[in-house]
Image 1 (cartoon, helix red, strand yellow):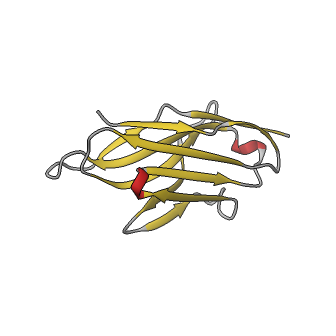
Image 2: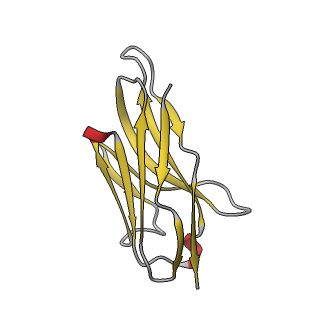
Image 3: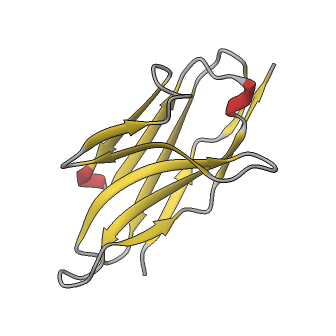
Length: 121
């Protein structure tokens, strides 16, 4: 059973920083891509950033220059360094991974349980 476990959310003042972490555990063949989405109250879930070996990194325009995504393949982990946080960044942040569970299977998407990030003005 594949699981994604997140940590690092919390409450921070505007202009501050937080670092989110997510690690994949369980039995699987490989990880194609990892990333972060977020969902604010009353809004749809939106892409924040992704990182993949072949295609590199991708960021939402709203976080470019402030957030940095990185990955530790040896630990099956992904990180999101969030700087210059704004109240609009307040949301539940979800880790996701595109994982090949067995070598002959297609990539499946897995989600973490979500971690709350609250930025006060």
